[in-house]
Image (cartoon, rainbow, N blue to C red):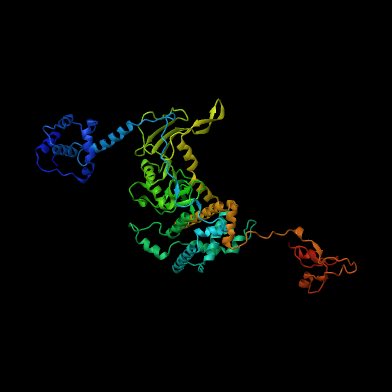
Length: 615
């Protein structure tokens, strides 16, 4: 390839009459680069030959507009690319971006709490429906009726059909266990046992059916046998096995769906979560981990989470009560292929204007927050607030008057950029928050424990409004996770999709409890789960109290009359022990108060004592 010096390239353009053609990339950036070369902010950044720069100064007497454009085009193809061989770097384009960014940031300066910030535009709160449960408070809502809104009989019928098909295929492959098709009622009893095991913890599944121990539990054996429970657990399936095989054949192609085995039930749960409850104004977006170490290609490692290994879910929750409104399971890099980035698309995919309405306030952490996302949400009429990372694109970094490590605790700095306000606050360390909802500082304060003169005291510090709001409303997903973990049905399984199935059960039970609390408010979480288990298993929650030995006392078999002559003959009946063991008829006026059976009580024949010997 022939190389030209800058002067030769310039002369070549001036002497040539051929039309110069831009490439598609250069056409896109030509106007911006033309503006840059005309302004000539720092010629030494992108063009090292000062003589060429001087020769490019526009001279109306000797140069037409077209020749100037062609000069700049050739300069882009010659001088703007430095390097040898194939290793070439577009210096001018990079320099243009850096100069524009640094020039913009050089005009910004951090303001303090004494400076007055403008009142941001208030987005009118217009929910699509009345916030709260979309059910009539006048109707009777039991724990089972609310749970069946998530796991309806139609959904459970599909679950039973796919489970029976899975078991039939396993037996056809040679599995040696007895199987009878599971019914809808039996599936509900199986789910009830899962919740029972969530409340009554044992070290292994077989311990729930032990009968020879002081710690034996009689309840599970009355619902189903241990082997039946195990065979259902082995075969529970949310999609049809034949459809699974068809999907597996597409592995490695864009048509392959990694979540195909959980999609039928997942779509149902997501739809019901949004249909029967409408959130209040404050929402939170965060990750949730479902513990699993299966080698599926979808499991993630997050060292900052209590559950480090598992499936990562992006969750939208109501900040006021922790209700799970929507969620999506992260399957890999290509999960959101829109090109705006994972954090941007994860948030926008959970916010549906048609379902929610407008004017909502969305809170998120620094994984999601970026100026572009907040501006896009503002255009969708959603306010947003979240901590941000200083290295994010378009975030102020080099502005003057910023915080330093020596800044006093409680110091505030802020910059307003249109609807965005960037706030920095010095707590024990620097806190960075970006918001489109609040002003920078409205006089709020925060109390902190500080050590002064060898004593801990509470001290008040000024605090930015976005930080106050973030601390108050960001915990929606954390609250949801906390409620899920109280009585979680999660346990070890052999298949990854059964971990997701158990998580769907947790979401359904927790959301049903929160709706019941909004409508009735007369049950604790534990009481709700106890009643739900009893109703799922079809038993009464109240068991007759066990009688003690103090209740077994002899009493007259009939009421005593006033006639003293017949007092020994009134109410005499046959002794059950004499009749049963000896085959004799012996009448007695005595009976056991607790057992309600007539027994002899004489000096030479004490059937009462013999009857209660084994009690």
